Length: 167
Image 1 (cartoon, rainbow, N blue to C red):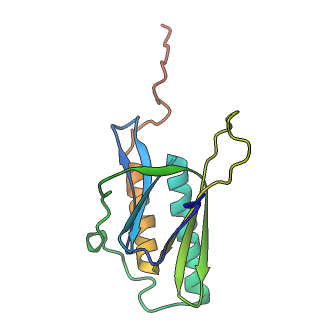
Image 2 (tube, rainbow, N blue to C red):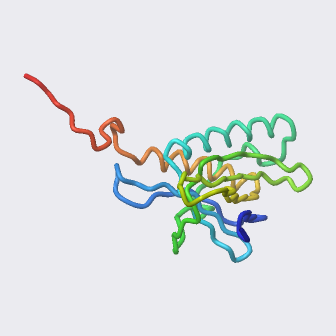
Image 3 (cartoon, helix red, strand yellow):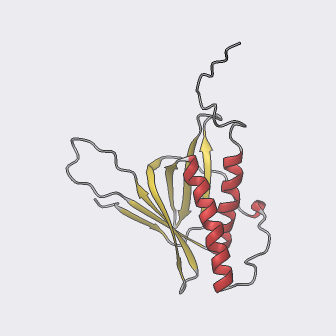
């Protein structure tokens, strides 16, 4: 498969966002660099976990290799965090990983495709997308991801379920 691995290095844009009404939102991670825009579908829990993992990684990086500005407050107004059109997902994400390249001081977010079992597929390799990002961009992503998740319904337990009440 020609496009089994895509690298955006460095990413000059990275965000998460949703499309659809509360309760039926589809979550996306979207990144761009070098004239290429990549959109991927995530689950809400993956967005939450990604934000938590980034925050943990940033704390660890700051302890090991502090850089000026690492703990400065992030102003999301400095970053355009809205999803960009066209939103055409490459795939649904199964796994997300984080890494750090000390030589370039870039953080990588590695996403791997969810493969759905199908009788027509004998052997398939999941596609991978890597977004290589600066520390400030990744910090902004984590902060924005937390706000996107919080925009959901007040009671996520009422996810289209019918609740019966007896009197």
